[in-house]
Image (cartoon, rainbow, N blue to C red; front, side, top):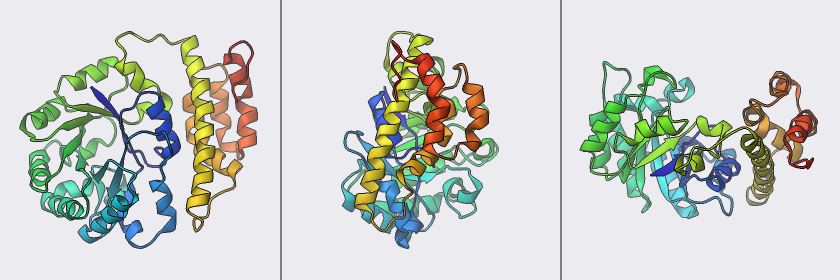
Amino acid sequence: MKYVLAPLADFTNAAFRKLCHRWGADLTCTEMVSAAALAHGAAATRQLLETLPGEGPVACQIFGANPDELAFAAREIDNLKRFVAIDLNAGCPMPRIVHGGAGAALINDPQLVYGCLAAIRRETDLPVTLKTRPGPSPDRVKLFELLAAAESAGCAGMTLHGRFTSQMHGGAVNYDLIAALVQRASFPVTGNGGVYDKASAQLMRQTGVSAIMIGRAALANPWLFGDLKSEEDVPYGELRVSRQNDVFKEHVANLIDLHGQIARNLPDVRIQELGDYLATALRTHLFRYFNGRPGAAELRRKMGSLKTFAAMQAAIAPLLEAGSRNGEVLV
């Protein structure tokens, strides 16, 4: 079974993708890239297309509802020669995406989905895939119309988040619909939604999917991919503490590399000074990495007041020291 890191806005930049690949992800995805922003020359959007050496195969996910803009984005992405596939997002339920007619809004118009996918396909030789949901709500299943659109457009695969748009990111996963899609589709199907341990992964595997995509669960546990591949039950306790320390150190190193690369490759992009960049990038990760450790609750309470990376280092030093091996501080 292959395991894939889901595209997560504000999280799955090259630094985090490299971390997940190092800990077992077979494929990772960029953050959602706005086709409109690329088409209109937004320099800042281009930093989302940066990849780091050694991060493994990466798919680029784009969003939009204008076939011409999506075609332009596909050309730009294809020319970079950095990615193994282009994925169209037709499932994000966030209001800022849906109100622009993209993401989950596309589910309501399978014909437009076909037009968008066909436009992308015309501009690239890369495999093109679709990520979507079963429908807006349980009484409005659009899944098989979306499948027809994807197959007619020549897609190479499809990822199904097994929750309806109305469920956002919570509630029961519709495994029966995922299994039905697997049975009907002429291409590989990746299952997404609710996978956070071996038991939930087994439920997804039973649908017959070719791969499993993991999103939010990887934010606190980038090593989850490797654990799911292991035939043994992986103990936590001291092993978890060691991993948290190692993951934090690796993430910082990857972010430093990414910051330098963006500064070199994209001189027109205004980027924060390194310390501020690290503080911004790590703010939402820290309390997840150290969850369950003595002092973690206090760290979470203080996160809003930690404005610099130096302040973050000072706040987490006691946690690192308490969990370090042989007294070694891993930062």
